[in-house]
Image (cartoon, rainbow, N blue to C red; front, side, top):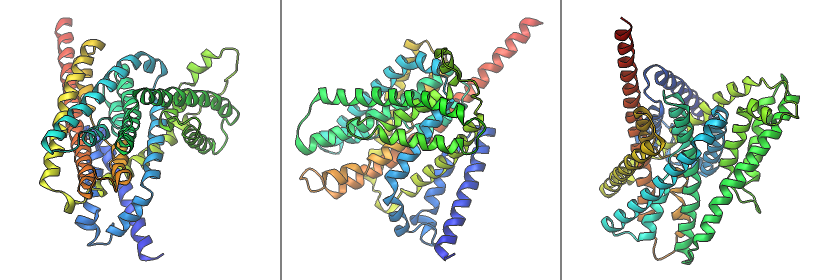
Length: 431
């Protein structure tokens, strides 16, 4: 092997080790591994150790960026499939109205507030400011799903948080692309936007659910056969890719979620299809292998986010704008979580968990570079704006992830304290 290949092998092995021990720390101390992985990426990046020890140089990062869209899209599909496998479909149905209210209201308020503030503070074109607000307006499944699944909150609240991250993911993508198109051609059609969003949710969800239901019968035939998990992954990517093609033009992310939801709720599906036989559906190894794959993908995704930080391009303006955007996100999240607490009749711990789930990630990282590619050459755009969009987005991703880590940890401590007080109260009453 040549030197570059050996270095790559060592780096990959070290990253997986760090991811494993970070996950162990999370399980024991409730300190998420996300920040450890992001900071690892920053350390091995070109600006700190990457160039000095030839770990990740600028040229290496440029080569990685060539496959960025493919890697992030694949990560999104795998993480959502894993989320669907772990969700109870009845919980999803119970929390759908609440998650729709929370996600749409939070996204709209964040986008509008960020757009207005950046327009006046930075003298940025209002549509461009709205575009940046849209990019960072949704939560990320890559952080929300693992955090929510391990928090000691009600299943309905977990389902609501996961569905919120999925809904806002589609909202972020559709709205950002629409705003960029509006800047390019100056045409705005609210009907077409609403239709596009409805198609991406409805068609993608239905296709994924039907495909997942049909795949249960395939798994029934493949019961205890080797490679049944790998063929399931193949089916997942085929479905996620197919629904994105014309004339469907739907969301592969939503299809991946409902595909996993159908497979993860095989007994529920079996009861609904009483005239059909789904006899031997104990494919627990699928869940086991999927958790392994998801760990691998999540580990490298967060390290990649750390690699994206280029300190030499940051300015005071970028830092101030990023902190301002984070402040707006926290304020809006507090408002909408309080509303959800009242409307949904949530317990205090669950309401605090809803507030803490504000991290940005996958979609924001992918979309942050889209305006530079789409608006280059227009009078409204310049290279400085491209750097600002990317750096502000990265600051927001890291900042909201840190806050989610702190707030979720505080929520867990609060739940522990409440449970301890209730236990002491029951002991006193029993004496």
